[in-house]
Length: 109
Length: 116
Image (tube, rainbow over all chains, first blue to last red; front, side):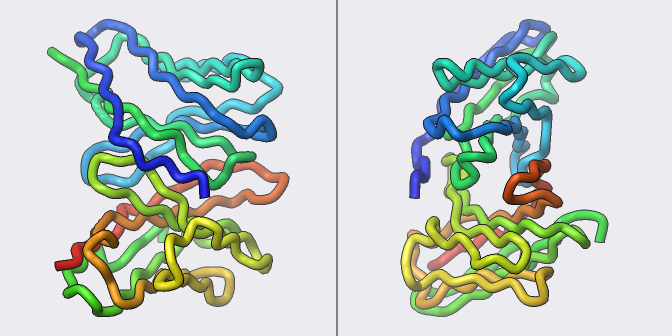
């Protein structure tokens, strides 16, 4: 399958700054996307989702942007906190087989 | 239970032995996924069950890997003749949606497998 076996990139941000985490997908049939957060030693947890008929969705301190033209998804975290430190994965339903490779977010105090 | 339950949480085995990993999904969830996560890497899809449909086994890395889901609920992932490269955390997730439905995946805490 289209499994991603890459070592994860790292994003380091200062506490209080905004973070932007990106994800590219390949399956144009994907019509539903979710961002997951995975803290060390735990299973992934849902953060926010978006359907393909939207290009933006906001939650509490998080915003997901979807650009279907270039098949790109981003997660914006406002006023990043130490508790946001984790690995972030995107997941596309039409592309149900594979998560995005993931990004490690490190928040510096 | 309230969430997805996996057992064992930790398993250490010798190369060549068979192991079974169990997943108890959220009651009523029709979709069940197995993923594998190696150290420092992303989530690798293994297999997907949806209701009574034939499972999507396209992610299983070799014929040593198999999974079943009995009665549409509990699932068992079996790895035969384990190899060191099988060492990873095996994550199970369930969802209320499938096919044309959409839904959040709820993950278990994973089973950490170490093959010596």
